[in-house]
Amino acid sequence: MTLPRLALSVIGDEIGPSLEEMISCAHEHGLKRLDMRTVGGRNLLGMTKDEIINISRTLEKAGLTLDACRSYVDAHSEMKRPMYHVPHSKGVVGSAANFVLHIADRMKQEKATVN
Image 1: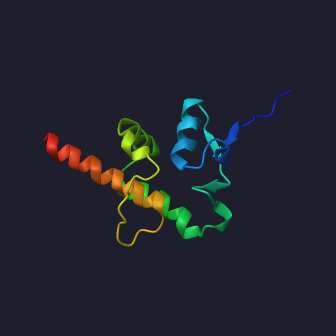
Image 2 (image 1 turned 60 degrees about the vertical axis):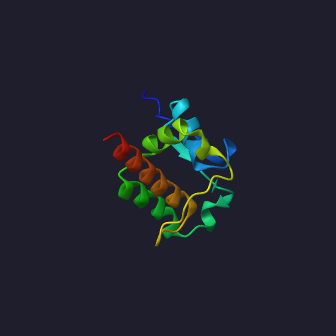
């Protein structure tokens, strides 16, 4: 008899309010699935499809993975402060999407100063 395969997941907003906290905890514990009800205090069901898709597209546009973003923020603790200012990018909706583009800009600036 073959046993059914179970996928272990965690409910993200029970970890913390931010997407970054959810992802960090999932990686720390080797989880591949993250179930979310809210991000940043907003219920996903109340977000538009475009808001949700925008985060994914922003990561792709920035040439980043969630791992790269998380690693960069972990190395720059000032970005974890609740009052950290994230500039708004023209035509980008959503704070998470703007945050990812901000990370990409900072990474490019740092690379330019090293070269």
